[in-house]
Amino acid sequence: MTTALEKAKKNPESMKAKILFAARKVFGEYGFHGTTTRMIAKAVDIDISTLYYHWGEKGDLYEAVIRDINEGLRCKLVEVEKKIRGKPLGTRLDIAIDEMVDYLFENPEISNLTLMRYFMKTRHGKIMDFQVPEYISDIAYSMGLSEHRRNVPPDARMKVLNIMNAIHNYVSGENFFRPMVDLDRKEYIRMTKDTLKFFSLAAFAGERDAAV
Amino acid sequence: MTTALEKAKKNPESMKAKILFAARKVFGEYGFHGTTTRMIAKAVDIDISTLYYHWGEKGDLYEAVIRDINEGLRCKLVEVEKKIRGKPLGTRLDIAIDEMVDYLFENPEISNLTLMRYFMKTRHGKIMDFQVPEYISDIAYSMGLSEHRRNVPPDARMKVLNIMNAIHNYVSGENFFRPMVDLDRKEYIRMTKDTLKFFSLAAFAGERDAAV
DNA sequence: AAAATTCCCCATCATTTGATGGAAATCCGA
DNA sequence: TCGGATTTCCATCAAATGATGGGGAATTTT
Image (cartoon, rainbow over all chains, first blue to last red; front, side, top):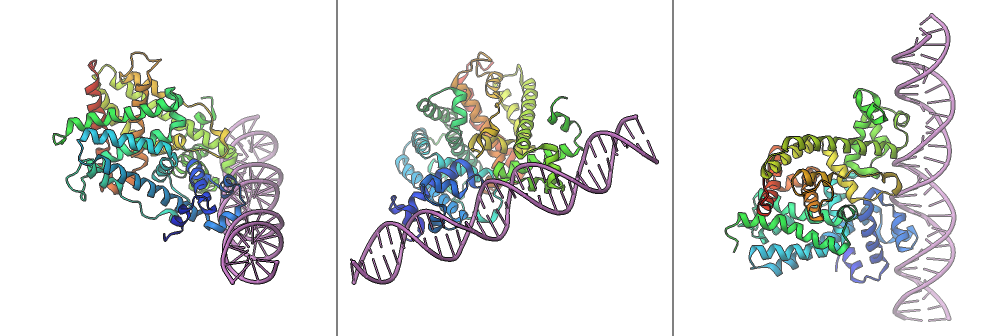
């Protein structure tokens, strides 16, 4: 319990936490420049100055949101890693995909904000230049794509990126893609998992003899 | 030669075309709300009012940009479709991936803007609600994933989305991902192709007996 | 060359947006 | 209940931003 963020999340009823939660959703839909502090304040039904009282300037709130979703993602990955440890590669993929897809469909702002950070620049560049956690190597090792936890080869990293991004795409693009494939939400999630497995299971099965 | 957009592109030296080209790049980097008309004007080194003289309000210029990149993408897809027609599935994928990856790395704004449209909302929602071309079915048919050009099953659409989006991801995310995998640009493009093939070739080989 | 048209820039507006100071309201322990 | 600390809101500001009118330069037409 040191950072302001942690303090806010401790009591989800606190105004500070409510603002953070609303900010997650609004930033997640409209991006940094597409979101105004007034939009967030309206979502919580407070005056704009209350927002500034709790979080300071817009960039600081955004940074807190990014830290928040990164932390959530990190925790989830650790949780999944525990579940799949020791299992055969096919099973590892199967469980990991199911778990991550469900988690991200429940928290789509995570996928939205992650992708925005990958693909978009911000006018005031310096603001959001804090360090990005390096999940990729950990995932690669945990999936058994690399002998060493550190020093993961580039091709293994690229493969992990492929799968992670594919999940984010289906989650963030739901509004766009679901009408294209004409499925209800439940079917869409189901088919997201199936499609992800369609691509990854065959690929890795064909590659690894060390499929444990 | 009817629309303003076509007229502009006919003479790439015209002010109107230069503005369009600059707008592509700036919108592609910063998104709709992240881009100011002054940024675009500065990129062309003209006064902001000249920009308004040629293209009217910001939303209209943005719409022209989107039409432009969609048209480019459509043409490229038609071109690729001709090249792969009649070849075996593996070859089709191989050529299509190579061609599309090269094309999009040369025109990264296309991937950027496409992804932004998938994942982000705009404050003035109505503006950008013009129709999105339905490439997906055409690609699915052209790749041999569907018997009929029309009436492409959902799972085939999902698979096409997966591949197209994966390409866009690697292109748009280059600034972010390339340091992660520690490759120079050429190697990164090469490995993008390899990774895409790694996932799709195995998957489709295992699936289709009708691999022609 | 004169006239008409097109094109571009300067100055300026109105609105939006990030941000703040200070007054009112609320909470909380003594 | 009193008094201080915390929290919230109202009014407002300054800068950024989308947008326009009018004048003048450049180009084309006559």
